[in-house]
Length: 291
Image (cartoon, rainbow, N blue to C red; front, side, top):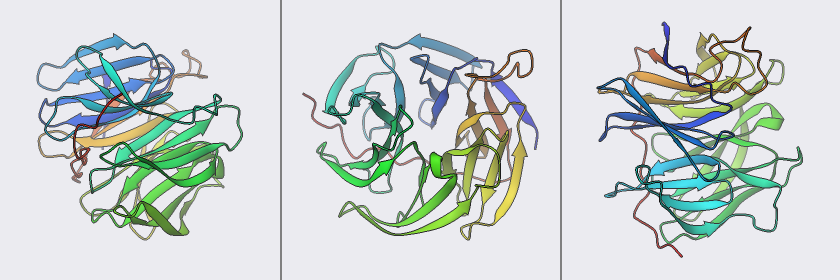
């Protein structure tokens, strides 16, 4: 499978890539650049907007053109055209050294997201936010929360604290806001780099961006590595499926810390046309109340 460059974006930290089937566009963020990208698949046009703060993760909202957006300090409703945002809830106000990181909706329309401790410690947590904007802490003691994905039936949650160099799997009860029964899904401690963003395909296999290892790997539900795609840059960050039949894998990457003369494509958006199909991303259940 060939890797194609879609946009040579030079993102410091490209992340949170999302396919909007309704708009036929890919949306992603450059977290450290505080930038929002859109790429229209029909016109092959990319647009770039500067943001007032770091945008770290987002999801579509059911019956709305708004996004549910995890900015660095909290969860907001966000209009990606006007850039207007309205606060739903602040996150970890008492911990100024943490910020919101990876997140996606579970199969029940609730937003599950993690925070990162930017001092290198473990003050981060994993949360669920329901349709009323209520936060429930699922885990604490996290350094860099990543790789959030859900099995097709929604009963299993995949999650990685990247500092642990492994991807875990939990039993997940979306209605109760609980997780249990942690077990190691994939141990990556013997490889360079760390697990980053993930997505699930229609066969229940997990695709993970291996930051620092120049690769995307597809894992069976058993944890067996089935396929590895090598990339022309060392720091892939996040993946999602999209396109008219959901068979195109889109990949963000990070240029921060790389040498442009060695990795001229670092920070680009890539795509791979696969023989597999993804699942449409779940949308947040409703437009939540804002303050």
